[in-house]
Amino acid sequence: MINLRLVLKTCLFLLFLAGCSNQGDISPRPRAYPRVIYPERHLTTYDQPDCPFTFSFPDYFTLMRDSTYFDEFIDNPCWFNLRSDQFNADVHCTYTSFSSYTQFQQLVQDAFKLANEQNKRASYIEDFKIILPNGTSGMAFNMEGPSASPFQFFLTDSVRHFFRGSLYFNSRPNPDSLRPVTEYVREDLTGIIQSFSWR
Image (cartoon, rainbow, N blue to C red; front, side, top):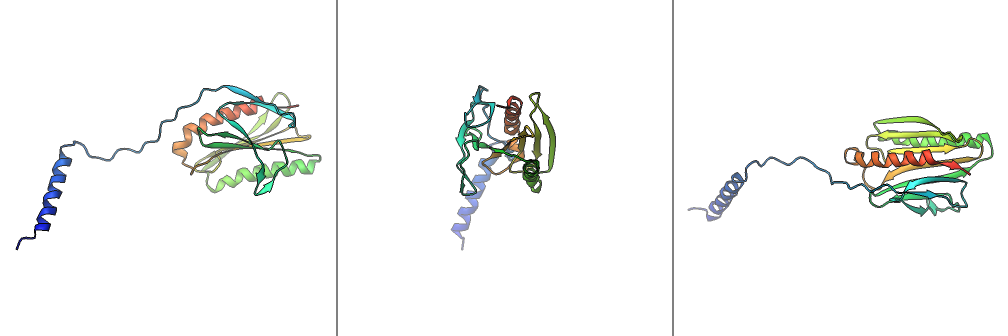
């Protein structure tokens, strides 16, 4: 007795193969990433009267006041995020004043510690000194690989003021797909650093 169900399945399978053979090359397509449209750079100035610093940043970032830190309320007008909805990224910015060399050393150590936290995922961390003509100095940290933060920096006058910034993308780190965007944003963070000045 002929099993009609088996014959029907076989015929459908053969028809499927025949249809596929007419489509030419059926090899899998290479992986691709979405096309990124970069915004034009129009600079705006951060110049809040409550904060002792100014800098220029691209207007594709929106200034968002940071009100909590690890679920604790922050009463510091100089803690804020620069948010880019287009790139799904935030630059977390914090400012702290200090009055002793011990406090200054602790702030620098904390900045290095936070950058070194990325060593768990980063394949390489490059740090370089920042020295600006106006007396501002600091360090920048460039992370390669699947780290949560691909770029961090701090700036100080070594007397009273300490400013720190760190870039985070609000997505799972994929260094290959994020590399062009990271490089674009890193250029703008370098512009923030170069335009930074204390009052």
